[in-house]
Image 1 (cartoon, rainbow, N blue to C red):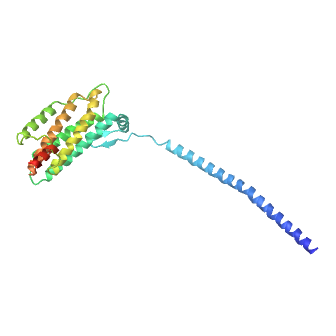
Image 2 (cartoon, helix red, strand yellow; image 1 turned 180 degrees about the horizontal axis):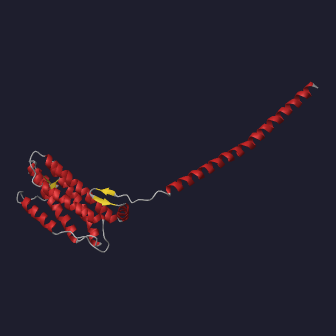
Image 3 (tube, rainbow, N blue to C red; image 1 turned 30 degrees about the vertical axis):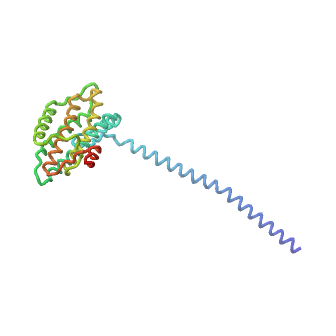
Length: 249
C-alpha cells in the first residue's frame, strides 16, 4: 500500500514537470514574436522620422577647391566619367608638383640657378592647361598660345650654348634639382600622351601637345644646367659592349 502511494505521487510529479516544460516551450516563441514585432515597429518609426527630416534639407552644390581652379560637384562627375580627361588632368597636376619641387631644390642650392623663374612661368602655363582640361567644351577646342612654344625654344637654345654636346643618354642623377627635373621630364611625357587623346577629340588644339613635347626638351636641358650649377658630374650611359671592349684593352 505504501509503495503504491509513492508511485502515484511520482507519476503526479512527472505530470506537473511535463506541463511546465510544455508551457515554457509555448511561451518562448510567443515572447520572441513580441520582441521582433516591437523592434520592427521601432525601426519603421525611426526610418520614417529620418526620411522626413532629411527631405526638408535643401540640396546645395558645394564647390570643391582644385588648387586655384574652382570645380563644382557636376564638374568632378564629368571628369570622372571621362578617363582620358581625368588622366590628363591628374598627370598635369603631378607635373606641376614635380616642377615645384625641382624649383625648391634649386632655390635651396648654395649656388644660384638661373632657370628658377622660368620654371615658375612654366607652372603658370600648366595651370592654364589644367583649367582647359578640367572644363572641356564638346565640339570646341581650347586655344593654346603658340608664343609659349617659342619661349621654350629660345630658352633651350640659350642653355644649350652653355653646355657641352649631349651624349646619347644621360642617367638621371647629378644632385637633387637635376634628379627632380629628370623626374618631371618623365611625367611630362605621360602628360603629352594623355593630352594627345584630347587633341584627337577636338577638346584641345595641337599647340598644347607641341608645347608639352618641347617642355620635355627644356626640362632635360635645364637638368644639365642644374648639375653644372651644383658642380656635379653627369652620369652617361655606356652600353655593355663598349664596357667589355674597354676591359679587354
